[in-house]
Length: 307
Image (cartoon, rainbow, N blue to C red; front, side, top):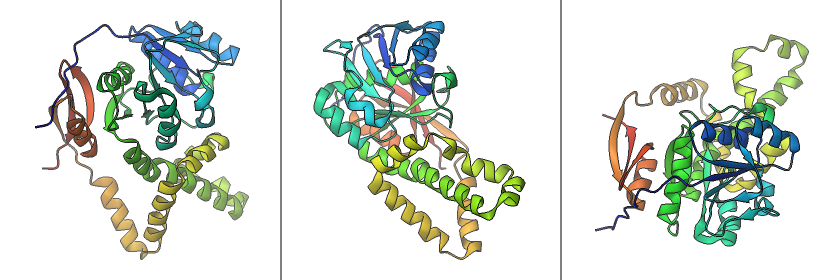
């Protein structure tokens, strides 16, 4: 029998957010609105001022759960010059997890818990802050063999407090999944936009909803997109190869197969409780489910009801 690890209920720890752009600024604002104690920092004075106006304490002293909301290339040095409690749990919002796990796991050991909220828009910077950004979003929180479960819970509770639903996942599973549903779509959006540009000004003038929806994400900062896809190069290449294989199918078959996937998702959800145990939590995530609430030695959540 696999042991479970009940964790006593304790006061919610403070949260430090490093990087107050769209994701970090939105998270800090959402947590302030939820009653959490939040300290924020950004190298940009304008971002600090904007966060302070939303009730975020600005400072260099971080404790509790420290969230790195900075670009992937800046992760390793994000805490330089800050006073971080040596017992603080460190997490991040990066869109790739294995490279960050290798880097931050080496630096912080069991204090590091990877995370990635599946939200955001093509806009960037503190001007794009929205406290509702995480409401109803899926937030992957990584649960590795060596992950400290109480620290995982602290990160999960931050996500829940911001209004998100938590998906327990390993870093490798996360990277494979997001290659298919996020990273390749960015590349396809780039290809679609570039090809339409080659078609000329008439084509662009006639572009409407399908073109807008299909290319929206490539309006994101090119440096951000490049770092994301290159940081997850192997899974992204594999996912892109699957798309290319699909495009080689007869068009009627391709259209029918895509339509079936897009319209065939289960419409009902089944509520359940899951013990605070690694294999049970990961099974929930692998089934397409999510955690919605913490209850003492259990979490509440749901999985798709497939009949």
